[in-house]
Amino acid sequence: MQIIPLSEGAFTIDKTKVFVPFNKETDNLQERAHGSLLVEVQPFAIITKKDVLLIDAGLGFSNHDGILQIHQNLANNGINPMDVTKVLMSHLHKDHSGGISKEDKVLGHTFLSFPNAQYYVNKDEFNYAIGKGSPSYTPQEFRILADTSNVVWTQGSGSIDDYIRYEVSGAHCPFHQVFHIEEDGRKIFFGGDVAPQLQQMKSRFIAKYDYDGKKCMELRQQWWEAGQQEHWTFLFYHDIKTPIVSL
Image (cartoon, rainbow, N blue to C red; front, side, top):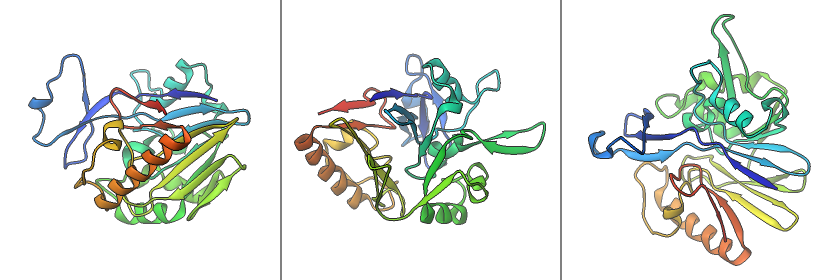
């Protein structure tokens, strides 16, 4: 397997849920709003024997040429976005789901960003996100999933093509799901926003921004112990310095 981080950059975010670009070389975190968090936004592409996987879909920002940033990042790594076969969604918060679709402002039409892929989305998370809305969710970016044959609705735990497992973790949001991918003895784990950064795996703390912070803390401990015993490769969506850690 080949794992490719698709960083969309660093951002600060506070209680407003607005993602403000942050230049790690020149910006000063202390000049941002009190309590701002500094995070990377970093989907992953994984090339397996069978698939070109995309794990989560980023913010959905476009570059100066009007090209969806996640499309550009894939192209920069030699991957045609049309070749993505599966999009695995941990949850639908706007920094993870923005790249699910793209709006053609000239035609006034929204279309899937990865039209040749199957999107794997937890059905309960979708319903919850539609009802919850702003500021954590932006339903207009993923509402298209309700009307396309490209979506595979998941619930609870299950498997995809015998080498990908998904399970509902909850904790960060009620129906958050995580993914285990195993091929040729290599075990990859994506914990989404329950396990977003390396440092969080090594410390005990309860975050106020989680739906169930205590459960998040307990799950991180369980996964870190299992990963050490079974030599997992962890993918961290929000880690500024360390997107991939192999134990």
